[in-house]
Image 1: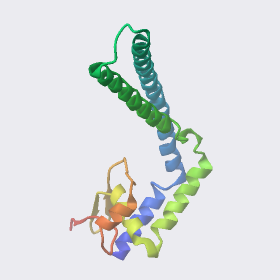
Image 2: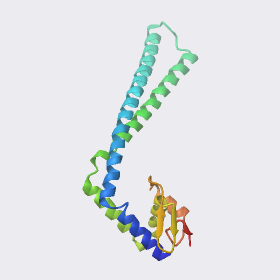
Image 3: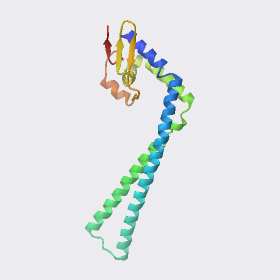
Image 4: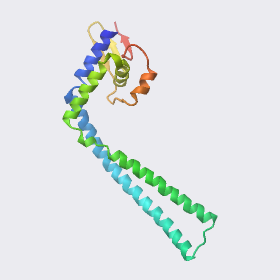
Length: 184
């Protein structure tokens, strides 16, 4: 199994972790981020409008109470509280959108991409942290088929590498290759 691990890691380094491949993936990420930012801007504008309207409603109700045109009873008080809670919810949604938009995806340069590839490659080959390699490979590879003449590696294009520590705890074992199917 160690020999197969070495073949798979070598294939990953020579394909996915190549600087040119990583740069293409980064360019696609930047493009999607730009499109997403446009959608975020439209959504934020909508939320801002809803928040302004809710604040105006609260202000108008307080003005009417202050002038004596209406009295503050329990029903009106509950209504005002509901509008204020809506404003707080809108504030949280706007803050979330702002955090999402502030991720500096556009500023990822070629040097950072290349350094990332090197760092992942070093981490994959670290004998003291086989759990990282196992989880990373499991995220990228869904099937390994071994025949007399070749090893075929396949997996989804979109690889998820979130919470590696959690996955490492879920998938204990001595080898990093998720599945081997012999076709001979």
